[in-house]
Image 1 (cartoon, rainbow, N blue to C red):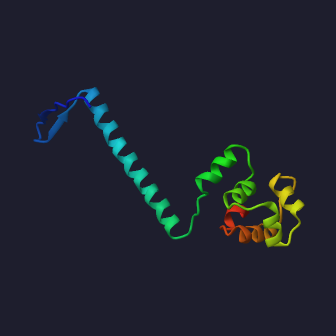
Image 2 (image 1 turned 90 degrees about the vertical axis):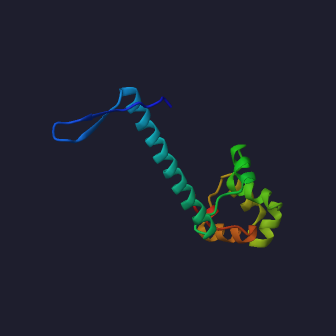
Image 3 (image 1 turned 135 degrees about the vertical axis):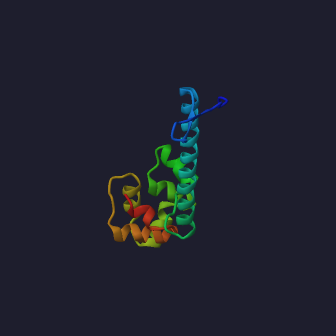
Length: 132
């Protein structure tokens, strides 16, 4: 930040005016904007953390996100993260293993009821699968 050397001028009516160079003014306004932006970032962070702690928001685990970025579907990434096979999910949901494969490979989308059953089998928040 540049050093600020304001000048004070008194008007005929007795008011004091502060005179800054353009560079000083720009530096001050940039500093204020940075402070406001930092405060906004802190507020957003606090809101997100409160939502997570209250169960209002459940973020995907980093391993699941990484698998999705590598090309896996959400369902496949979640299943692998939980250490389960398609056969495990099929057995727990009473769905055919082929149906699980179709869902993982995006050949089928699945009904809300099916996705809830899979979420239960995976022991995850159903919102992860239902918010497509």
